[in-house]
Length: 257
Image (cartoon, rainbow, N blue to C red; front, side, top):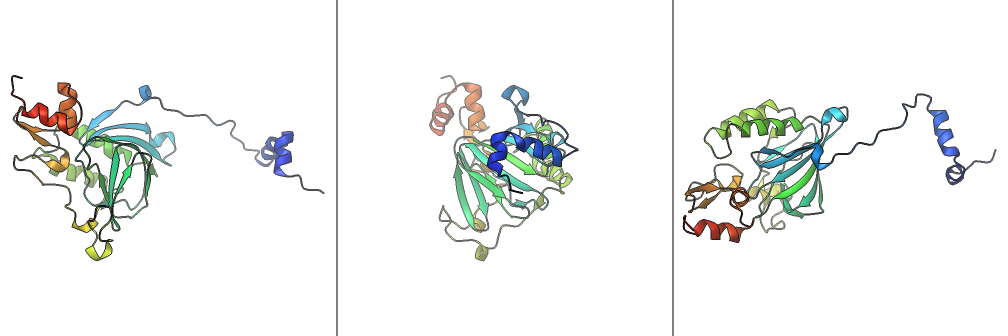
């Protein structure tokens, strides 16, 4: 019997019948799932905001999708995920990723895959927020962001109570999140895109400036308010442009100006 090619099946409309004949347990037409901005509100947490676009329960635990909007100065400590994969798509800004191979900057339009077990750190070393869409496979780790948002309602990053409570929270998610040491210098490619081995970079945590502001968490000193501020939050609150120059100009102006 002459074999009928796929092109002929498609042209004659027989391909649907052929597939149906081979799949008697066909569950029926699949539903299209979409998420509009109004369907998933932004939730504040210690690094910025997140939107849970696709929760794990919507996919049978296969994967979850989260939109992250992280402020300038935020960086994670070195860590790994032994039981899941992360895929970042950079929508706005620049995502900085540290690995054993060095440090690389990923601008908008980039796609980054972090496989299970890969030691890494990532964050936003720029002056404007970075927005990414994160897909985690399998699902489950999205609860970590939900719990961080709950923590953020009671204690903010930079407060004395924040670090011990964050460590305790991370421990509750040890299935997905494992602490890791920075790669050894000999394991890194010296130079990288910044001319600096990944292992030589300072890990996040405890690095305060002369005013006591926790720079890795995005805080900078503002003389006008007399305290450490996150520039993008102050810009939104006071109505000036969200950039370093406007922050400096506003904070150096007299309090009554």
